[in-house]
Length: 249
Ligand SMILES: C[S@@+](CC[C@H](N)C(=O)[O-])C[C@H]1O[C@@H](n2cnc3c(N)ncnc32)[C@H](O)[C@@H]1O
Image (cartoon, rainbow, N blue to C red; front, side, top):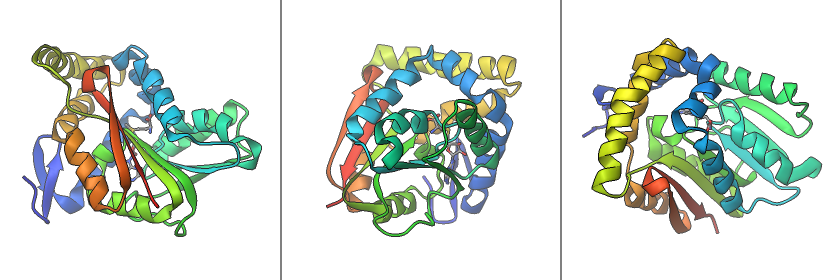
C-alpha cells in the first residue's frame, strides 16, 4: 500500500519524493547497455510488442506523436516511418542519459528532420493542450511516481480524437506461465544484469516494479478516471505484456 507521502520502489516502500531519484539512478546506470539488455532479456520479442503497439495506435502520415519515456528511441524509430516528413515525433524522457543514447542513435541512423528531443517529467508535460494525435508510453508508466498525474497530463496534451497507447508489463495469465515467469525474472534477470550491465540491482528493480504495477483491469479503470474513453487492452505473450489504448473525444 502507498499513502500520499510514500510509494513503492520495487518492493521497497520509500518517500514519494525520493522515487524519481531512485529511478534516475537505475536508468543512469543501465543507459549504455539498455538496448542490448532488452534484446537479451526478451529474446528480441520486445521488438514485436513495440510494432504491435504502433499498429494499434493507427498513427497516419502527417500526425504528431509524443514518445513519452521514450528512452533510446525504439518507438520513435517506428513512428518516424509512419508520420513521414509532414509529421513530427517528440522523443521525451526524464533521464538525460537515456535521451542522449536515443538522440545519438537516431542521428546515427540518419534520422532527425522531424524528431525533437525534450527532457520532461510525464507527470507535468510542458506542452500545450491538444498538441498531439497520439501519446505512447512504452515500458515507462511503471516507473512514474504519480501515475494518475501522468495519465491526466497525457490526456490534456492529446487532441480531440487523439489516443494514448500504453505498452507495459502486466499480469501473466495462468499458473504455469506465472511460475516460469517468476523464476525467470527473479533468478535469471538479475544474473544477466550483473553479467552484462554490471548491475544486478537495477534488474531486480525491473522484476519487482513489474509486480507492483497495476494489472490490466486496474490500469484500464485508471485511464477511464483520467477521462479516456473507449478504453481497451490487448494481452501479448500470455499477458506478460499488455497494450492499453484509450481515446480523448
Ligand atoms: C524501460 S525504459 C523504456 C524506454 C523506451 N520507451 C523503450 O520502450 O525501450 C523507461 C524509461 O522511462 C523513463 N522515465 C521514468 N520516469 C519517468 C517520468 N516520470 N517521466 C518521463 N520519463 C520517465 C526512464 O528514464 C526510462 O528512459
